[in-house]
Length: 144
Image 1 (cartoon, one colour):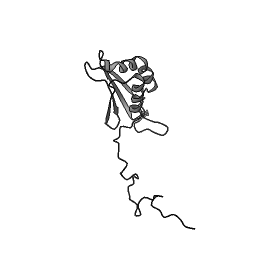
Image 2 (cartoon, one colour; image 1 turned 60 degrees about the vertical axis):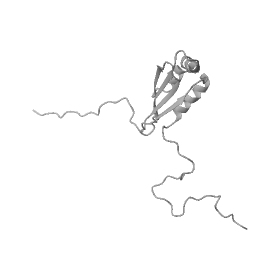
Image 3 (cartoon, helix red, strand yellow; image 1 turned 30 degrees about the vertical axis):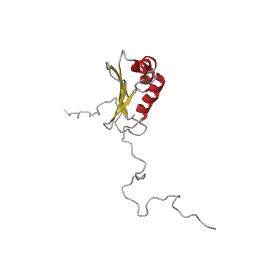
Image 4 (cartoon, helix red, strand yellow; image 1 turned 90 degrees about the horizontal axis):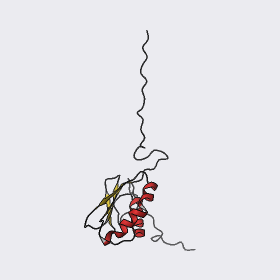
């Protein structure tokens, strides 16, 4: 009587790995919260945006969780939560629905990383060059 060894299987998974494999892109924005007041005049644009465009933007981005919550007597906000643990918060006080759509696209397109000033060294390297960064502005023009 011979014994058969059990067949080992890899567990099935439906979620793609974070960081992406070849051909896979994971949007950095993981969650967007739309907060508004039901009675405030300042939230009228947010209410219009939710009624008209929120459904289509949610269908266009299935990997992002969209949460709509009421904030009584508070200013309307868009909050984006990102994979790197950061958040971005944009006030939509007295904005129209079309302006809120632009702010929503800004949150969805952001990576969540901190913004850096332009005065910093633009090259990121593990070893710094001995000569520095070449620039045509500091080079002597050739004379013929």
